[in-house]
Length: 382
Image 1 (cartoon, rainbow, N blue to C red):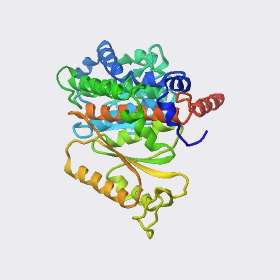
Image 2: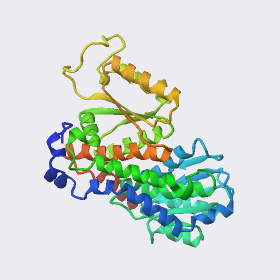
Image 3: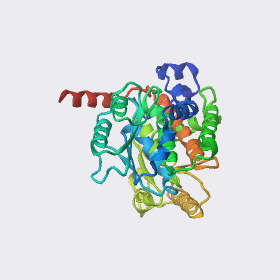
Image 4: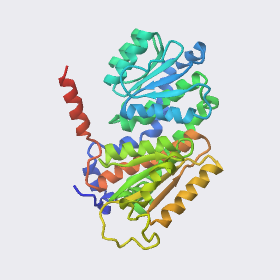
């Protein structure tokens, strides 16, 4: 394997099929359908009954990996409107402060994640309100049934990371039912996000060539680079983190992730480092295109543009700084009216890009052998 991307693979239907035998691209295209199916599953699970129990003191989302991202989505969406905190907990058990006045949302695509089950058991032991999201007939489903807690069944799309919307929608609906979010009449924000994801799927479909396919173009931008991905705006941080995780699992490549304004207080200094091709005392205006060098930094800005002028000024200042230092930059701005739709517009794009990057590098995006090996090794201790 090399870091050189074969552009021809991305526009070759045969190569796409051969290098994506388990059809991660097809699974990525199910995002809109996941939203609609999850809405139905929430109704079937009786989440409307949560309204009668009142608002919790706090919501704790317990989940790991591709399931834990559901908590990040909820926390980002609720940050500006929720009257109570939303805390994402990645690990076994629960924080010491969690008690009967709180609500624990246990999310596990398989329904068998060790850490999430431990958190669920602790919630039951402490008498904490509980909602489960995961695979039907799973250990998590059994625990929720025994605790007489609502459980939303999720159909896994190839892998948890390809099931983000199926996992995130029950979390968002739960928050709406207990008064943390307003999804509009008949959950219209969910439908708007689904429509936006359908539009992204059309733009990024495999038979659209690279020069008219934004996800393939983004994959080409990232080839041979170390991406430093910054999010800006209300959901920018979770988008950056999501993209970094998708690059790791699908393309098997690392990325540095951060969010504005925090990244302006630390990570920005790497623009004067060796990987950026610059130094503080270097000629920042020289042309670096022909430099004989290895891996180079590429800055990716994911701007969830909600109209905030302060955030927009930070994004523009970042563009100028990168340009002065010869650091290549890719700027992607969200589309849509509400925060959920805007998040969907960028999440769909980066999901596709991570798969196309894997295929362009000659990598099957689906297997996650180190994760599987770690699970086997940890299971042996029992």
